[in-house]
Every structure is written in structure tokens, then in C-alpha cells.
Image 1 (cartoon, each protein chain N blue to C red):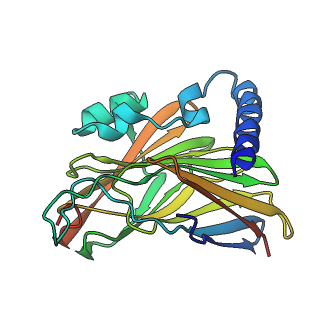
Image 2 (cartoon, rainbow over the protein chains, first blue to last red; image 1 turned 60 degrees about the horizontal axis):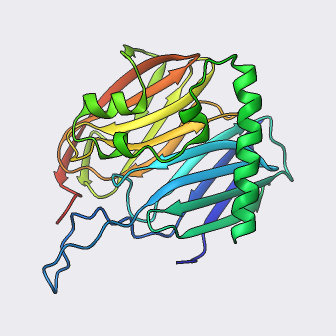
Amino acid sequence: MAEPMKIRATMAGDVADIKVLMNHPMETGQRKDAKTGKLVPALFIQEVVATLNGTPVMTANFGTGISKNPYLGFKVKGAKAGDKINVSWVDSAGDKNSADAVIS
Amino acid sequence: MNTLRRNVLKGASSASAVAMAVAAGLLKPTLVLAAWNKPAFESKSMDEAMKGLGAGAAVDSKSITIKAPDIAENGAVVPVEVTSTLPNTTNISIFAEKNGTPLVGSYSLSNGAPGFVSTRIKMGTTSLVRAVVTAGGKTYTAAKEVKVTIGGCGG
């Protein structure tokens, strides 16, 4: 499950614009497997934590209504180029992933 | 991997203590610590989901903007952007009212993150997309209808 996560962090004026693309199937638990006709068990990201230089700026809780391969965009005021952004997530099976990016 | 997560959690709890002090108890600990809110996410109705979040009666606000398509051809991927210009916006939650479980995502913002989140959601059918914003301890809301041609739940 440790597929790469993409983070793009750029400054727009005094606000850093952070865009994150996570790789995750986000199964709702309601979809049927086309071959077996059985329900595919739910598997989705539950918690996402974003930090700026180690200080949390955003924590998100996801339900099953977030699309597959979730996209997440947010902004941080008072950040500057060179600051470090870390984004990590945990899914309903306890799998986790994390990635770093430097604001440019 | 484990130690990294531990550090992240450590950072989260110490900073939340600061945030709590700053907001002088205005923030609910559940919002700050962001433990996954099972009752709210599994609620089948808007009312229950709102209650699960601990959000009281929400007031309509023109300071919340929802950017979403009027017509979404594919309900599996509906881009939604919520901007809140309310001061001290601490939480933005997104609901798709007619989804089986209306609560889609809940975003807690702190330490200089302005009231803006952008995401992509699944919608089962044409419905209102509702944003519920907590700012300065009060709850505000706004909604926008999105018409869905092909549903994105189940299938």
C-alpha cells in the first residue's frame, strides 16, 4: 500500500498553496466485484495529518464519500519557501503512508 | 514508519494544547485531536451526522463559498472547493446530503491554515452539497446543489 504520494507546495503571495494526491482505492464497502458478485469490503483513508515544519496545520477525517485516489488542497498562511510540509494518512485497515515536500 | 507516526502524533497533541489555550476552551477536543469520528461518519441522515460532529444549530452564512460543478457527469469524482472567510475558521466539514452516509469529510484547520479546502467527493445522486464551518466556536453552513448524471456510489 506504500504507493507514492504526490505533494506540490508553492507560494502564492504570503499563502502557501498545498496540493496532495494520495494513492488509495477508497472502497466504500458497497461496491460489488464484477467477477464474483461479492461485496468488496470497505477500505478507505480515515485520517490525514498535514504538518508545516512539524506543527500540524490541518487534520482531516475522511468518510467513504471521498473519491478514489483522494485529492486534497489546502492553504497555509505565514509559510515561506523552504519550509517543510509533511502529509501522512492512516486507512481503515491501519495502513499508513507519509510524504514530505519543500515549499517552493 | 511507526516512529514517524509517533512523532506526528506527539506534535499533534502538543500543538493542540497550545491551540486550546489560545482559543480559551472554545475548541472541542474532538475536533482538535481528530480521532476518527465513527458515529458521525456512519450516520445515515444529515441530522445524525451533524449531531455526531457535535455541531449545534447551524446558521446560514454568505461568507462560505462552495465551488462545485452545477452538473457532474460522473458522480464518482465531483470536485468541491470550500472557502470560508469567517474569522477563526477551525473546522470545515463537507456533506453530500443524499449519500447513504452524508458526511464526506471533516477538516480541522489550525496554526495559520486559512478557511479553504479542496477535494473530490463521490455522490450517489443529485443532491445538495453542504459545507458546515466552525468559526470562533459557532457553526455556520452553506449549500449548493449538484446535479449528478451517473451516480458514483456502489455500482
